[in-house]
Amino acid sequence: MDPIGKKLLDIATKELGYTEKGDGYTKFGEWYRKNLDGDHDEYFTTAPWCDMFLAWAADKADVTGQAGQFASTVDHAKWFKKNDAWGHDPEPGAIVFYDWNGSGDIDQIDHVGIVEKVDGRTLHTIEGNADGYKLMRKTRDMDSVVGFGYPSKIKVEAKYTPKHAAPAPTVDQVGAPAAATRTHEQHSPAPAPTPEHVPAQEVVLGGILAFVLCGTVALAAGRAAAAKAPTSPPIRVRKRGKHHRPATPVALPAGVTPADLDAADAGTTLMPAISLAAAHAAEDREFWGRIAHLEEDGELDFWNTLHAELTDSESDRYASTPGFR
Image 1: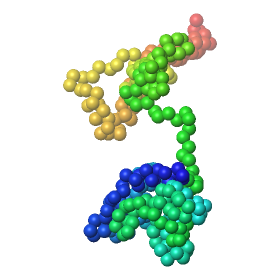
Image 2: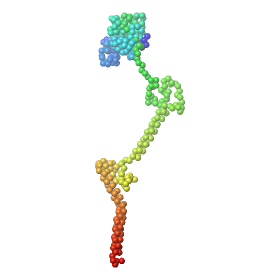
Image 3: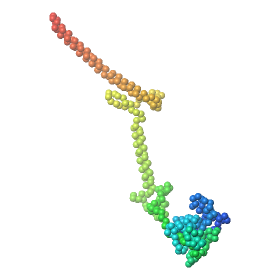
Image 4: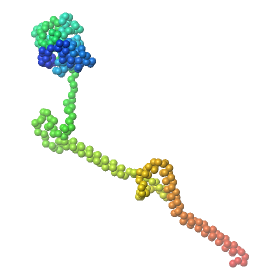
């Protein structure tokens, strides 16, 4: 027996006796309309349902890739032929296609069923829409058979699942004992922790602690750097050719806040230049005040030199004057 066909027979056996409603409605046609027809056409709800029953059974047996899902018996038969799963030998589990005129032409197929048993040239089948209204067992000869589709011969590409691709643990499973997530070793005692075997909980907690520690160190370093950074631009004062910052901050007048200074500074662009010029002038006054005594000494030296020269010239003049001694 075709193994895939056997699964279809198991589903079909449970549905034996199902009868369409008076207007032709069947649950198989309604299912096809909702799940397979792209337009959800109401036509399928009351349409001939022999092949739509097989589509429904394939879905229930989870063999849609091998059995196909069609509403048209002609298209279903051509699908088997295209996939090299078509033949003329009766076999239990095979899908049998009929032409009531006996033409043997695949384009003239009228009906479809599942072979349940083969007795010589006699077929025992289960068919939907048999006698035009019911799901039932039928006994037929081979005269009307066009051919058979063999579901197990349809090559379906297997889904590859890596052996190591275990599902990721959920949040509540992180750090849980390994025995809680095992399926085939639930009764095996968990090995005692050793230096080489660190429990998952300790690994996770260690990683969290390391992350927190690194974050704390980085935060402390950032705060230290921020504390060292100046909150206001340094005042550059020229004094004896060198620049320096004031050793102590300048006390603000009562009622004046740093915010007031920032607002004043933002309100004019001349303030920094005027302040700098005033500072330079004050420095110049301080500098020249400190060297004023040097200038005075220079002037005294000049007058002393002039006085000496005059004194010497007078002495010479008196010495050369006759009778002057």
